[in-house]
Image (tube, rainbow, N blue to C red; front, side, top):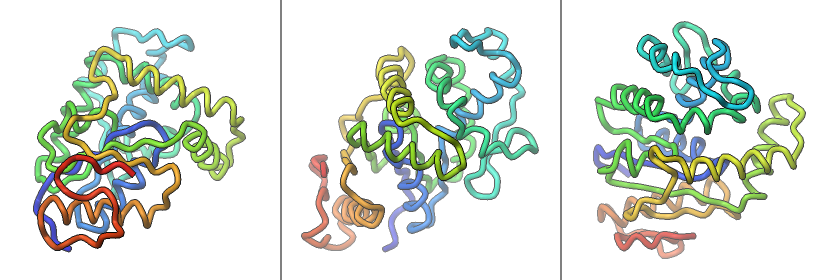
Length: 244
């Protein structure tokens, strides 16, 4: 299926599989994939390594000046680099996860990330995931998806991901971290996490990746009238009621 040169915004809660979902869309339709969450994690790692955030999440104002020269960029597809250093594994640790939400509430950090994302996506045909892509970063995106899942399902996914990387997570701590991030992300002053009015909700608590891709393909077919979408694919059409 050949689709127009559009922007697809994927927002939602932590550990709903936004990044995997967005990457698969990019691969299937030949889009550029940008992981906004990785950028916030990169800023968090930089702040930690340079003593610009305390254990109790007090952020040194010097971080604002430091962002003027901080070089975070994607290389080798979706791998995040800080200058010439590959930091992809470092930004996925629980230590970074524990402080990324406080960092992401800071207006000048959000401005830095938004500016960089717009620079990366200047050529168009982009799919991007995060928490405010459809509401703030790309409010005019042609397709907006808001992903959600039950908290215990999301915590189990995150637990399995960390365990697979050789870490020793505690399920209760992972669940607590997700709940804290949900609250912070939804109540922050700058660009809080919320579902855009014109988005399609995807609850993937009981779905696999194949079903998710079938869902979004049906959504795209229905929205652009490319073909009559198969009846068994839920959540299509232009009425913004695509909840599964």
